[in-house]
Length: 206
Length: 209
Image 1 (spheres, rainbow over the protein chains, first blue to last red):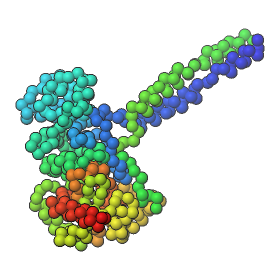
Image 2 (image 1 turned 45 degrees about the vertical axis):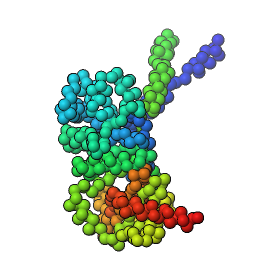
Image 3 (image 1 turned 60 degrees about the vertical axis):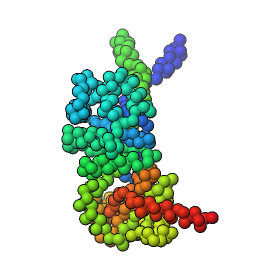
Image 4 (image 1 turned 180 degrees about the vertical axis):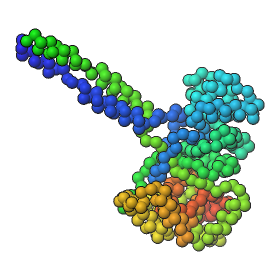
């Protein structure tokens, strides 16, 4: 009897230490990580040695996929609301409060303004599917119909402290990048960030 | 004796089973690991010349032809360069083809910018070894700017064909940072230069045959 009891006691493993470790790890992950933004298209950025980090807030991100479609995103909800309202006014489209609210919580948007209303009336799953699908041409940025320029202008008027960050796929032809950069230059947005992955600096080994 | 027994029982009750807690924590950790990216994305800051025509002309004049290197980015990761003014009448020798490897574009730029490059490396080594005067990032950046944008350093003009990829552009910009070139600009390619590449290609094709 006595022997068996001792054995039973040994089976009970003290999980306190384990719990300590996991809580520590959890804290670490919670503090160091930031959530991946939902992006409509998969983009693999080119690598560079630059180590400048992107600012925490007030970022206007411009996403360019390999086929040249342009998407945009703002990180503040209030900005998104105002921007959509202004864009609606300029294009003679009135958005309902529900539509504006739906729009303001989107991480990325990128449909021509003409179909924006139809797009906002879709269900959330349909919206996501449509945004990444082939049917969606993205924000038009041609010289004839440069909605992209309008968006950037409205965003800048709304929040002058915005930092522009361009995130493009490494296979994107330069023609598309040129179009976007030209639009930005026309608006006198001459300073912007190009988002890249980290590569080791060859000078460091010396 | 009875007292001892009581304390023993109390001790036994004190023991909380942490297994579910650990389970939950592990789940949360997994969730955070999957749903988040650890590092913030890196960015490369560039400033483009304004589209304003008056300003651009002034800037153009400032670039001495002898100190200018023009890099032309073409499709399929090909890259050409020429010094100063292109020799349009001698397309065969007007361009030099190179590549994005360490012994291509980088070596070329480093040899032309050797003084500034060495100074930059010295500065970086000093910074890494913990020089107290370089502790402040602003001081370091000012010094770096002074070195890389010095009077004798070359000016690099990057021009890309429409068929070049975004990666080529980033690679070229990256080489500027690696080689310590502070004066560089992205410009539009001219039809003459496009023509030059075509002619250069045809000459190369002819000699290969």
